[in-house]
Length: 360
Image (cartoon, rainbow, N blue to C red):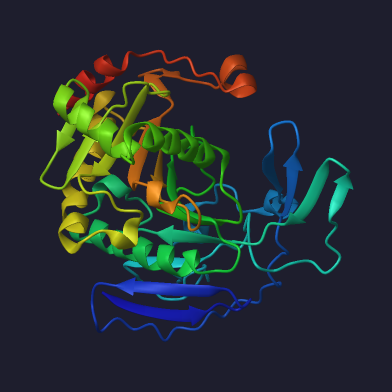
């Protein structure tokens, strides 16, 4: 893989990850762009001790443009996009409308009330374009391209984990207008959080309790071993990875893909583990689409170890889930889920696993 970094017209970084050594990356960004916006505010909710990001500039982000004005497609003589080159394999660049960045406003306030401190949302947000083909999807990529994506995510995870103040790096993909995507082009994002998100905090607390009870055993490793033994909720597996429906799945269709070896993050995966991920993940994505014979909306979320305290408890895994519960029905987060965080699943996880096994 060849890595080439350039600077866009407004100073943001863009990196080409090429599968060919002779790719021409000399094309400049010819646009006239305003400077990037200042970073978001982080405001502490004292009632639950959680940070909330306020990023008003994101209201102006591009929303479902026509295909000939897609900012993630390669540039053409008639339209200059975010990617100056006329073609690419995988591209990563700083988000033009970031939730977190290092561009701190000089008049940043530090407190709203005695109970609500405020601090800059210092971090980084990047966009990952999986292919130059606007009409493709991650599930349609060849295995070799998935490997390129994994290598790009490893590169960016390592770089973003080293940034000052970053506490966790979170790569993810949203697919489908039902999920809320604002660009149809196949792409994902990477957030470098300046705090440990609430879900990760809960996972760390559970992992620490388990380690204390069991003399240092890793919770996720024990959960994975139990699923492999039970087999009931296994969807697919190979030498290095297992894909299974969690026994307490929150979503109608939810699968976790985990390596058989405990690693903290994507950079720690071996070449063999990176190669083995592609066919298994593509298989699961195909099963998702085959369930109702149409593209499945989903969120694909990489759970990586935190950068600092508690890193030894982390166990890399990918969580893939959909809000579709039937061919013509979506699961909306209503009162119990949205207000109280108590999920009520419409489909028994064992049944969901069986449906996914039978889908292909």
